[in-house]
Length: 419
Image 1 (spheres, rainbow, N blue to C red):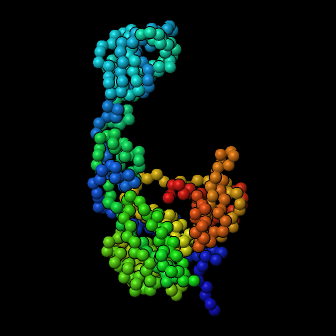
Image 2: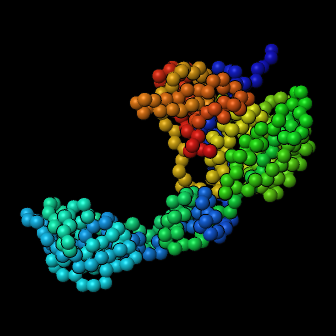
Image 3: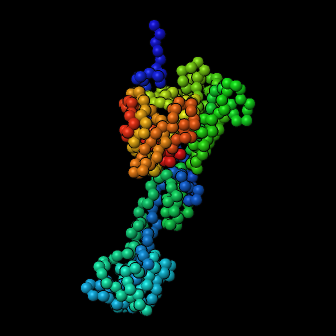
């Protein structure tokens, strides 16, 4: 009797790790790198901060006006009658008023200007009547209004950015506002990438009638072109165990992480998994996911290894769902804006088998009522790379979900938070 092996055509795929189990295992098995770099803040955007940053002074450093208006004494706040005040002088940002002010007087003050020490309140210019050198004010005003107090934003010595922060443009501006020109960040992660397969041809080569141009490596090159990653391009490796073993061992001497595509299934010519076993260890190699079920994860020496499937869509799906979280864990990133998963209304039904996570390519749009809707890009074969190009989101159908009807709410993950 012939015993069938598990395949993605099975109604229920038994013996496979769930997506959640696989990702949890991967993250527990990856260690953050220790090496640091001292960089200028201009070079530090999208890098992982390696040390806490403390405020070097109060922000703002002094009480200042939040609006263009008039600084007054609290005793001159209007009660039930109109108050008339003489303009004693002017205060501008960077040019405070230097004279004396007495009751019955006010100061014309601009946004950001230092508030005279004895004054606590600013009246917006739109709320006064100006006549010659006098202002007239009435109505309900509160002590302290329209004033930014010293230390209101940041207090000297306060932790403003924590180690592990993935630095955004706003963080760089914050550092500059504190007068900080250089910081310590984690060094770039060294990532080696390779394609395998005798049917795969490099760009510029003459392709055989049965050959394929190598798209996987270029997708990964584009996805990994980031300021926090150094790419080691291994090219296309011949699909035999010795060539793969040698390439992986050489890469493990310099790379923190190795990504290979192809050769991890159960075919006679799928040698990547065999080479990984000889060079290091295979921790697991099958996940209950479509596309991307044959995914090998392991280690070669100190290097983390991902053997991704050969089909181009499966490469991109598994990269974003498994490799990217591992990359960020290895960089020590603990605080980064996430790509949120949220609900959208499905426009056309989707057939799905229970017992695996399916990640389909979707087109996410707002309808006339500003509600999110989503539909697939069409045929969802793992070799149809055009489906990734058309899409702007993943449709994530959970492990225990089955057929999904049009009109139901489904989980989506917009590419804008991933790419």
